[in-house]
Length: 100
Image (cartoon, rainbow, N blue to C red; front, side, top):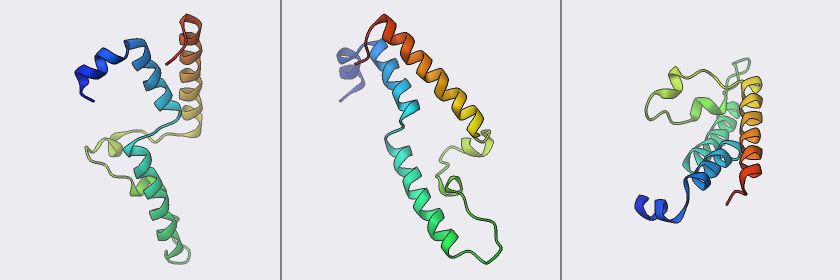
């Protein structure tokens, strides 16, 4: 589907809903990269030297534009905060009208 077709098919409100949903339940290529990174880190950890620090999946994620190196690591605390914000946004949108 082209961008023009997508714009004709869905409203800005629905597009915002899908963006919010993707923040809560990621899908697409980045999610696939994460699954692969989990497998890669598991294999690397199975073969690491005794006493060496364990590898993390993030270390095996592609960094095509260099943004991961500069980005702050996502901690459990700020992840919960982001999730709560997204839930609040979805609830507010639900009060004005349903999602897709």
